[in-house]
Length: 138
Image 1 (cartoon, rainbow, N blue to C red):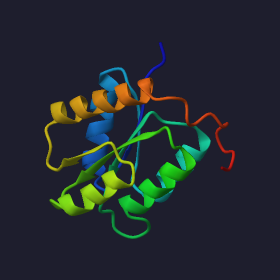
Image 2: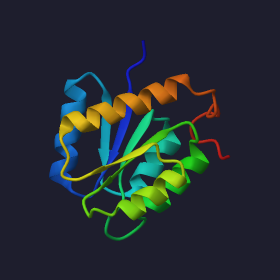
Image 3: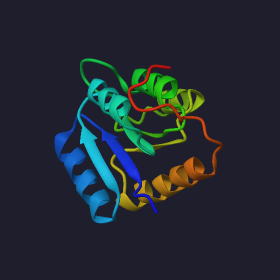
């Protein structure tokens, strides 16, 4: 059985490192990056099952822009949105663009695990949509 591949994207380094370590302790292959650009670069190299994506990141791309690119480049990748700004409106916009769910920060780790399990189940049961080799343009 393959290890679940999770990419966490958040500009808050302490939060990012904590989440990645806790996911790794649960047997997931988790990576973390602090910008949308870095996330897209990793996704061009290899697919991830789920991206946990902060909506509000200073400078560069925001989470909604990154979500649009993930949908274009890796349509089978599930995306969970995070917001620390209680921006439910933006989170709902993200769900219209294809995110599977969202969480408000601060969050309980157990809530993240539950939403990750749902996203992974959705990914496993969905018809194949993302079969091109890593790095190949759409």
